[in-house]
Length: 417
Image (tube, rainbow, N blue to C red; front, side, top):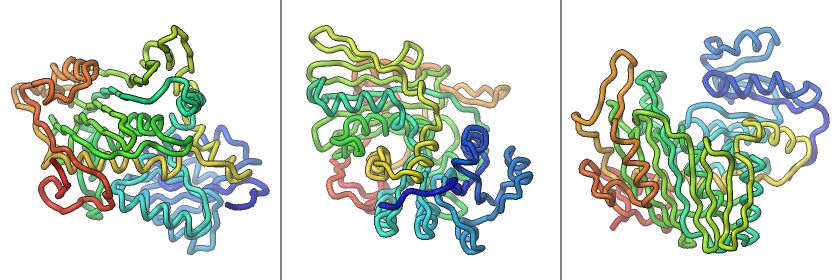
């Protein structure tokens, strides 16, 4: 695609608050200046970041908009986009059009049409784009996917994942778009929620592991979702969905921010001749086949979280295949779009079920841990398990789906049945 870069890679950091702070900290603390340097920062609130003293001390140019950095005559070999979801694609495209490669944090964006725009811009500009789903860059997931592709476990049948990370009310008050379907400041889609933000990793991971090539994910063909909320938000704080892919693989996801206690990420992958399990508290990924063979892969988090950053810098210096680019990440975007097509609006948990802990500043549903755990074990959505408060979503056909929302209004006009 491009020739190798000589000398240190010039990195533009887009957003240095929140998770961007940790990207910047890693760049400055763990990457030698002979390998990469901070060329600029784009963040209208840069001075409010904990990283500001580092930026100021280095005399790094700071701008409010990505285009302003380039208009001022600056150049970057790599733009690292860690801004809110609604800015991911537009900022990535601006960087590409000015000659930068891109590492964009997850998710790719909010809609399938944004994904198509990013793909088109990348190809036109002949630069690489990596999406920052860190598990996809880990040694464990890469080794597991190679064995899946080699057919060691037979045909994939069903993949399931469960994660519950309770959040306080402050999580939804930290900015204007948290818990929103659209950003009120820009009117752009956000589709914020467990499956498109904090737990987007785990939905993507199942799709990625089911993909037909190392750089591809399985393509969702149909989606049925159930979306719920205990907090007074526009979007959901709890999600369950079933995705069926174009190869017949069934994918189930359960995620919530309002359980009483946390359930760390876990997954089960069922194949014709093996079962693969992962539980964050029970060691790494373990495969057991019908012949009694056991293979241990370690845990995804055994690899440094910012391997994605190290790999992106390395790819600028010496071009290499991208294992998690837009082609892989857009499956999660398609699935999330289908989830929101499946329901007319998130269902509010009955008031009697919700505990409002004002002292702690949080809400939770005491029975939800057990309900989601049982659904995970039984491969059922809550409505299928006859949970009294559950409401089934429509089955959405994603064949040929290229615009969100498909029709606008209600369940966004999805072709459902």
